[in-house]
Length: 440
Figure (spheres, rainbow, N blue to C red):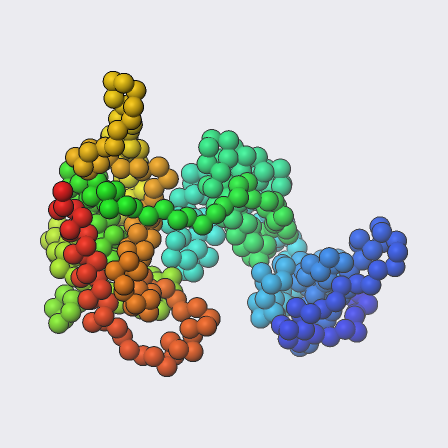
């Protein structure tokens, strides 16, 4: 049995504050030094702290076949918390008691599991139960990660492999997607470390490939008119996707909230018809009720009629029993642009070389789609609610924003639903949109 540390920890606060080893002036020795802390109530569980403060859970394991003691890495803190590390230590205790060598099992898993198999485990056991956007993770894994390194053994993936994957995405002109893929690969291998597939995360410490700034894109009245016209003429849009985009603009909802709408979330016979987004689908982690003004209600009723007995309101025409995806709306916007309906404003050059202003008819046929995404409809709605003098409290309720830290106390005591106020505000916004669409 290795010599045990006399330093004992028992709480998360103590673990977060555990000091790194003292330095002695020898750079080589200092670099390899580790401070070790025992965990109260779990004899073989140890927290090791590096000189730079990196905290790693280690289980001291007596191997059944040889009787020798060896470290077994559980994972890094805080990715693996105290409670989880203790549960893992108990599991390892039971395995060793039954004559099973966890090190041998880990080696077998590392040698057998490919990145694609790891990704499937990640989606099934982590993303699906815990993330509303798990389908995006699955899609990005299949689109970018698997084709490049899906057949590589998970334990053999290097930082260079990850860097080459990101560079390939960046070089095709998708720098932001490269950032999203890096974040996904980090999550994937954090899961792998926590579950014992690998000992370290090859994506750790790799920098983002592009600097990101907050989007500010909103649609002007001319663009709203041209956008609605494109939806009406179904240029690049099918009926289901067009209605989803209309509803997103009218209600300020996230596109995934609209596309995933289910019959059970609707109460259309109430005095004020209501769509209640359940907390399981809401980013705020709580139910988000949204009253339905006239045009929004008409759109939903039209989609219910078209969906028949299917539970999803925006039922996919290609995949029975499933809704259209949020990604499908982005593709539809791109297709509409390719079809020539949604284009950057073209110059109108006169014979003498001067450029004139576009006519109202021309503006109705074109709008600047550069950098446009469906989420910009939500931002447009929120901005226009402010222009219509809708109180901030009501606007936040409409968008389903979680209260900020400063508003938490107020939200606890203010239990008013604001349903009538939201309904009145959305009616005003809907009339404003109608005036733009029907105007000259």
